[in-house]
Length: 307
Image 1: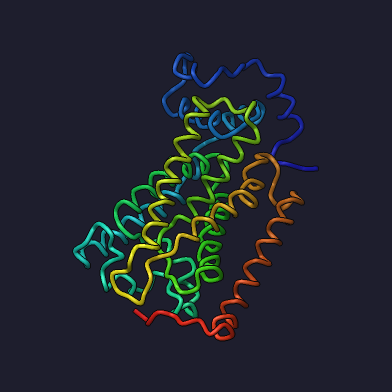
Image 2: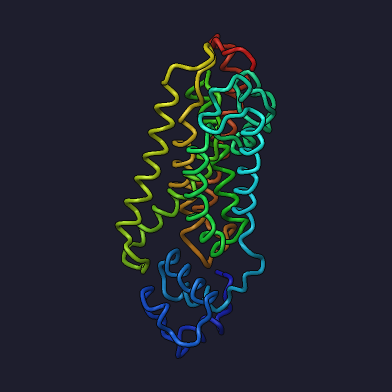
């Protein structure tokens, strides 16, 4: 089975004289610049095997840089600033009567506009919503992109976003959706599951504490979304945005995301498990599309008015 490494280079790094130390000794190594220490630190944070860490440290050139997650975050902040100035509201923007009238949020009455199943990720209910998502997105997404590349991380992120909106359209049919939580939760849950599955090989600092903090942040953000969903809407009969997108992102992270991040050296097209999970995901998308086409009329769902 072919992979990214040549056999000669594999033998060379296995037999090489460089011995990697623990993550706590990175700052004590002589001759390493700040950027090299950062790369070494990220290798220990995300990769469970020593050979993968050596390969990554020796081959990483920061070309291309981790641009995808940064670009998505900048776009989300720009959209939030635009609507903040337009609505003159920075906290709980979703309570503004004009919030759902833009071209980006997903609304069940406008589900025929297919781009909304992805574009809703650039809208956020308020600064607290944006802040939590942005923090998790940068702290987890940027290191993962530096190691696995924009293609893999972008695949997990987009699949999480799409699964979030489709899950809402199937299980919470009358609710709109905003926020990048589907993509963020897909990345975070995939990374946490990868850490748990490779617990003994991960050399990152304070693994248990950091996992607990990540779960606390996810729980706080999810709890806020649940509270907002069942809080009396400011403009009935239109309900508040749904929280089901979070669960859709977690499911993508624990299945497709784990497979994408688990094997650093093997190409995606060479992984049979990747194609199994991708096929399951494709079937879910296909069924959700047919559900959106036929189920609303067959079930006679009473949708809120168009914003």
